[in-house]
Picture 1 (tube, rainbow over the protein chains, first blue to last red):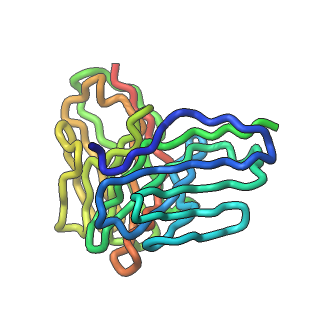
Picture 2: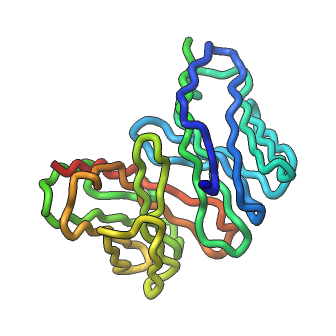
Length: 111
Length: 114
């Protein structure tokens, strides 16, 4: 079983819809949870991070972590064509020196 | 100017050739990483370095080697390229003085081995 599971299937939504992305993980030591956004032909860039459990909101983006279920989510409200990108979840444990990445979800927001 | 730069941005090479990918950063970070990205497989760590004298293998280091020439420079070599090394390669950096979660990525090198 991989440490981080993210269904890589592409997701197409109409503009204005809510986008829901999620990842599951197996390592209970993970404490830092991140979402990276990667535009075509670009490197990933950090979009949001959460430490331990709970929710975090930043504008139209909300990140949720449920450590009891080993499940994290990213929601994008009022999606825009500029949100079209690949979204990768990533996680790290305290004292660990690397990030474990999901495979990424390609999101297309149709005008 | 970009904080993390990679050269070349695109490269086509033949099986058996030696190739070097270079990464430079102006962020002042001490930690540097090399990843490859393949469709459906996500990002996989090849090597990482915490300082000039510290080099560590990642999950897929076979067929690759690295050199940390300076704090700001980290190069990846394919000693004898093979077609299944065709991929998008990313260099990333992070700081040991901050929370380790954030890594800053370069723009990537698209490598094709024929």
